[in-house]
Amino acid sequence: MGAAQLMSETLSEHGYYTGLITTNPNVGAFFGFDQGFDDLIEMFAAKTDDVVSPKELIASADDVAKRVNHWIDNAPKPFFLVVLSIDPHSPYSPPARFTDAASDYRGQATGTGSWINRKDLTADDKAHIRALYQAEVNYADYGFGLVINHLRTQGLFEKTITALTSDHGEEFWEHGRRGHGRGLFHEVLHVPLVIRDPARTSESGTRDSTLVETIDILPTLLESAGLTATGDIAGRSLFGPKPALTPGAFASLKLGDHHLASVRSGMWNLVWDLESGNKQLFDGSEGADVQVDSGAEARIAALSRNLEAHLASTALQRAALHGDSTGPSLRIDEIPDAERQLLIELGYIDDGPGPETRPPSK
Image 1: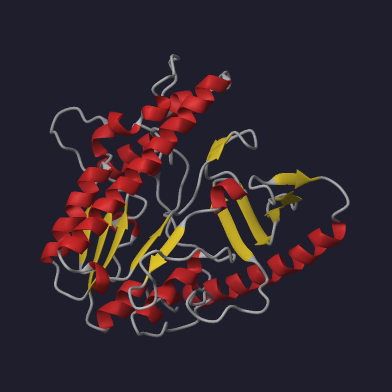
Image 2: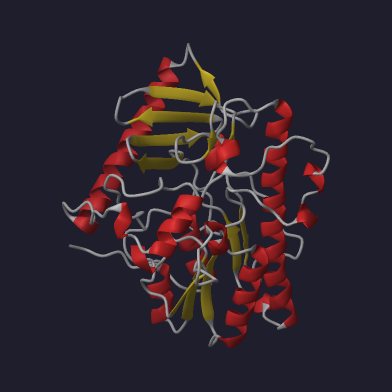
């Protein structure tokens, strides 16, 4: 059975000191995400010894920035650091100083799951919840700014390649649902990606509307560090020449009884339910995905061929890495207490033991 070489391992081989600071137990040692890192700092743990509120386990953007800056000051150079901040993520509870947009609301709705998932929300309730989410986005941006400012004061900013992205966006009732983990719409897939290489990027930066994928981050950062990605890497360096033709950007989702795959090409997004075989085409030219109900058979067929080829290629790659194994199974009650409590609070799992689940794939 083969094994994937992670970016942390490649950089370690070339003299980098590597660290992972994570606030989400889905990306922690219990699920194997310590692979290749010299330091792993998990910022989810009870702060008191008595009855623990899950909210205790959620690290703030301020706390994350302080921990990151401390690590930077003490880490051997050169270093490679991955930081996963939990803001913004439901429950939405930003500091008061970031909630000006939500201050005129006079209702009772909050950013907790019990409110977010209610069916009787008014337009004002929904606007308030969106405002709380935006406040958490602003708070996360503020925390990232604290790190960037620290790099500047320490004289490291012009020596450091920095990247900012997100693992997913959020739906806010555009398709009758809220959150993520149930669909592959524009609202979930369109995430920020900001990369600064001091050797290539001006202070003001440039914006490029080319469709890219998160798998492009690894070869981009390695090239910026003067290294070459090893193995069969599907992504491409974003600082290299643009391909004349691309099959599109691909995504997949497998969670519980949901197994979806999608391909986005230009303004079009094809979502394929791999369990039922149902295919839906969406027009994203105005931002939000709007379903196309008729007259698109030829386009669906063309996008389907691209997606089928991608799924076949992915299956071969998975088989080369893992053989016939689908990974270890575990019960929810086998997850350590702190991790389980936070996963419940964040909405990843239901309270109490339940059906078998699998750790998230790397």
